[in-house]
Image (tube, rainbow, N blue to C red; front, side, top):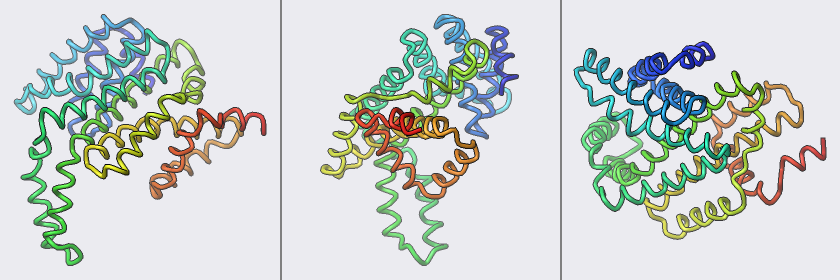
Length: 298
């Protein structure tokens, strides 16, 4: 990864080449899209918003040319600008100006919540765009499985279609956060060694954000609507990141082997409920100050 960062820092053309090529690779291997946006983040953090914007424009031209040569669809570049590079550039610009990772993520969360509201208001049939492929999947599954009837699968399909705006916003938000963290880590490696670990492990959204998050979850429980659940999805993404921050901090404070970190990640993969427990802990952290308590006990 670091060789990519060195290449990106050589100039805007090199950064644009990495961003464009990784964007095209991201069509087949989605995580490559996060690396693509991280290149924009790194340039913006190191050289400023103007350089980041110029790199975004150059990357768009490069992606349009490559996608036209391979797929004959230059529209791919527009999609990446709007959904991947532009959010990453905006958040990198805010992080550079505020030097606050927590505030930057709070702003990203607010934008994501607003995006969900606007999509449900302005494009109520957004999910219907995916009904045809989902119809084929449901029909094939009903034919191959004896456990689920076609009626039950159709009901689940309708719920998924209604929930898609929330899933869409949550996915973009999650990808933007990963790109932002990767770009921030690259910057720290070259300009502030060890700074990223300290910044990430001290991440705390504060009491007000936690109260708002809990209120959104309570409303979702009482309203029992797909729209409210979509809002909770965005909240879970934010506090899932803070939960991981708390986990990394606890491992570091206790001076445990990094093996424990990987073990816990594996447990979360197979038992998602464990991540929910960490999210609850991260919501309570502004009051409990778990890191301080661990430090005192250590």
